[in-house]
Image 1 (cartoon, helix red, strand yellow):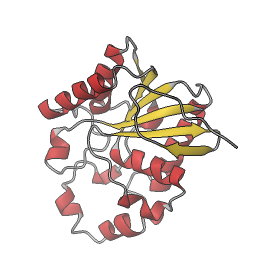
Image 2: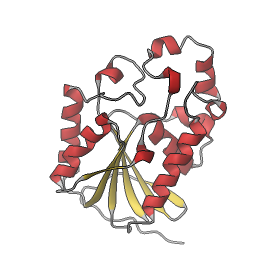
Image 3: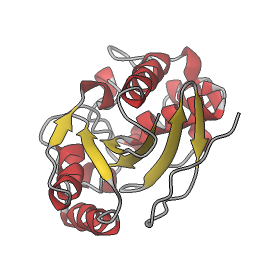
Image 4: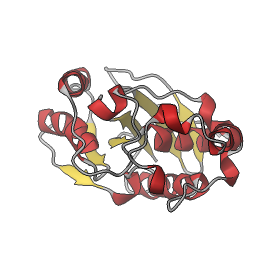
Length: 205
């Protein structure tokens, strides 16, 4: 079992301008995103963070680096934390995508949708859930594991562990540089606030 801090990367100009970055290389945090990452590192400095994992994409690595640095750790790249493969949607303006007929499927029936030339939501959800479950077996209940990743991926993980149907995952909102806390205990998950004095959750039954 472990305590996971799922952190969405900070702001970048693609987010700011409403473009779907996907797995586009070279998308870096902008000035606001860098400030968000530094603030996160300061807020989490007293937590007993054991390890810091990151998506391979630069914006996630740049969010993870200040956290790792303040704890004297190295950022470990984990490929399963990568963004969803949006295929031919990568680089598109969201305002244009919203006008297309496929957008209604993405919002209303995502379980049936595959991005053209890319990944299914179901595949991405399986990827992130399997990764978190595997990692949870490597750490103890006193270990805090940071994972910097991407909005949809974190939403898919939260939906799974809440027992929410994938078709409803769009109701979850994950802001840039936000922290989602999940306590994984075997096959069960618990959600709770960050406690900077940190007392591990006590499970019964």
